[in-house]
Amino acid sequence: MKNIVILISGRGSNMEAIVQACATEGWPARVAAVISNRPDAAGLRFAQARGIATAVVNHKGFSDREAFDAELARVVHGYAPDVVVLAGFMRILTPGFVTQFEGRMVNVHPSLLPAFPGLGTHQRAIEAGCKVAGATVHFVTPELDHGPIIAQAAVSVLPGDTEETLSARVLAREHLLYPRAVRWFISGQLRTENGVVTHVNGEPQLL
View (tube, helix red, strand yellow):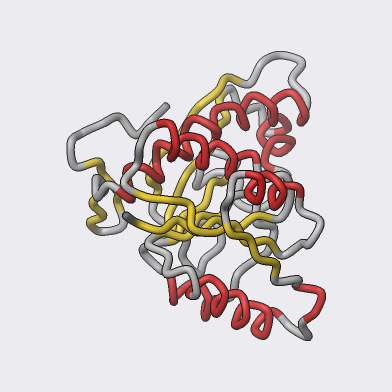
């Protein structure tokens, strides 16, 4: 039984999707803990209601990113994670943190990477005239939003789309894509060679 540790900063809707998929699909894993940098994160209540351990490492209590990341790493290690899942965790992690979990830490980003890393992805896609947008699940590396791509989901950019309407459609796809990618990882179905991730059985990595 493998341990999944999920980091959130808010509602954690992707965390909810992963918790539910893990339970209903019978993964060989359990969500061992949900950890937030915000004590008021609504996702903590969701996890607690389901008997999942929770913890808070409030970034406001630390003088710098390095000190916060050191404490966060200590807490994460305490749950012996096989995979660390970033699900709306709104902190840029230091290289010192990332390297401790490299190869077993994943993130979902609301664009078709390598396009539009960083913030404001939906508005930037609309302003660029993109006809397709989407989401990317990738391994986390020290370079922000640049890790090896595990899977992607695409949605059409519709005439009249706003940042809000496009974001809502992309998020709905994330809720399908992210649990699938985490399940592949914990089931040993992913292989990475020369920075390219493939599914060992050839399952489609585009949703």
